[in-house]
Length: 519
Image (spheres, rainbow, N blue to C red):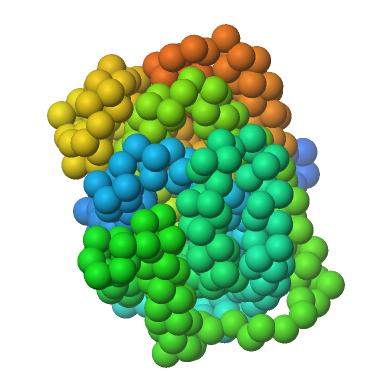
C-alpha cells in the first residue's frame, strides 16, 4: 500500500487465471495500515472495499468532543442571549418608569418589530447552511491548524446573495414602518390608549430594520465559519451601549418611555452591524453587495422558500398566543409580556446547540457518514437534555421570585407567579425542540418540517380559542414543541429524510462489513 497514484496488486489462484486488481488513488491519498481490505467475488468480477478511514484531499472527519462543542457553544450562547436580555432590560426600564401601561404597549409593539423581523430569520438560517457548506469545501491553500478545511473565498461568495437580499428586505421594511405603523396597530385591534406609545417604539426600531437584517446575516457568516468569539465581543459592546442608552433615554435625563427604549436598541443595532461588517472585511469574508446571479438565487431559494413557509407557521403561533393574551385584560397582558420575554430569553440557550448541528452536520449528511452523525448528535443531545432541565428551572425561579425587577404592579406579579410552572415546561421543551430543529435544518428536511409546522400550527390555533388563562396559552406552546421534537426523532430513527438515510446506510455498511469479516 503506497501513497502514490495507483494501488495495484495481483492475486493468483491455484486453478485459475491471475486477477489484476487496481484502485485509482489521488496523489494525496493514503490507506491506513489498520484498515481492512475486503475482496469479494461476484460471478466473474472482483469487488474491493476498504473498511476504515482514508485520507484524501478532504481531511478526515472527526467527531467533535464535548469540550470542543462547549468551546463554540459558550461564546455563541452569549451572542444569542444578548437580544432577549436587552428586551428584558427594556421591559425593566419601561415597567419601572411608566408602569403596566408601558409593558402593555410593548406587547403589540414587539409583534410589529421583533416578530416581523423574526419572519425574515429564514435569511440568516439560509446563510448558515450556504456558508457552512462552502467553507468546508477542500482548499489546499487554506486549512486550519486542526486540519479542517476553511475555504474563505467560497464562504465569501456564498454569503453575497443572502446579505444583498437581507439589505433589500430591510430597506423595504423600514419604508413600510414609516408609512404603515398606524394601520398595523389598528389591524391588531390595539387599545387606542396604547397606540401612541406602541407607535413611538415601532418608528425607532423600524428605521434600522435594514441594519438589523444585515447584522443577523453577518453574524451567521462568522458563526458558520466556526468563529463565535469575535461576534460575542461585538455584540457585548453593543449591549453595553444599549444599557447606557436605556438609562439615558428612559430614566434620566430624557424620560422618553417606550420611545427611549427603542432609541437605545436602535443605536446598539447600528453599532453592532457596523462592527460585524468591519470584522468580516478584516477576515476577508466580507461579501460583495451585488445583484445575485441566477445560480446563486437558485441556491438561496432552495433554503429561503421552505424556510420562509416554516417561519410563517411558527410566527402565526406566536402572534396567536399574544392576541389571545390581549383579550384577557390589561394586567394579564402585562403578565404575559413579562413571561413570554422570560421564555424567549431562556429558550435561546438552545441556539448554540442548534448552531452546532447546522455547522457540524451538513458535510456529514452530504457524505452519508452516519457514524459521525450519530456521535455528534449524541454529544449535542446530551448537552441539550442537561440544559433543558437546568435552564427550565432557572426560568421558573425568575418568574416565580424575581418579577419585582420588571414591574411593581402586585396584580401582574401574582399572575406571573401562577404561570411559573408553564414557563418551566415551555423553556425545557423548547430547548430540546430547537436542538432537534438544528439537525433537521442541517439535513435540509424542509418538507417534513413544513408539514409538522403547518399541522401543529393548525392545532394550536384551534386550541387557543378555548384558552382563558395564561397557563393554558403557554400549554399550547408546550404541546406543539413536544410533538414536533418527538416526530423528528421518530423520522430519523426509522430512516426517513436525509439524516435518517445517512444513519441507516452507515448501519447497513457496518453490518455488511461484519458479515464479510465473519466469512
